[in-house]
Length: 247
Image: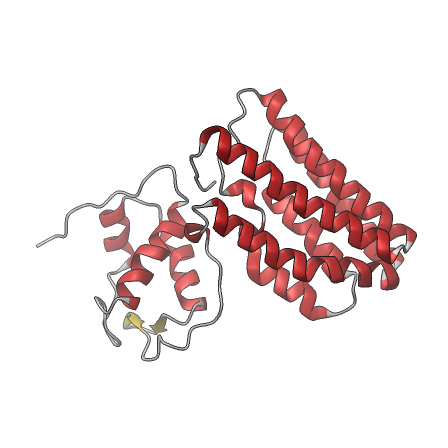
């Protein structure tokens, strides 16, 4: 008998929600080690999502070590799902406390990364960071939230440290480190949204200027101010209207 359709909530990222739904079944023991997952077509029909959503969700579960692919046989629950790698997923960021926890983690890593970047940055590094700023400006002009461009900027600062682990850590965390994808901005007009992201961009420019000058202390101060300002912005947004969503 064909399982009933279970459409996913439109306010959430379908990829993240599908990965979390299946992952929860695996963690709770509803799908035991060795169990074959439904086929791609079955998942598409059951959750009313696209092939891309299913494939991205499967990639997320595979990266987490929850599933394995067996050529010609399908996708199965992994034998060892206990020793899973550290991760932060968008579905977890549903409260201000959780968003603040991520910002606190970023403070611990990015403040020091900015200081090292100010000391070690090369001309190529500065060119890359500057290019990221330009792409954020372009996204703002298109009335976009500039999530991936924002992430690229912070990854470029991490890359400028010359320590590959900083950049790898930022890439591993991914877009969830940009909390505005998680909280509804609550801004009514395109102009208001552009002004909001433009304010964030002005903070980015100060970070870039400090790194370009090679001022270690100023770079640390600018990153700390940027992340603390982010925390304060989200507190005000939550206080004003509360709802959280993924974008």
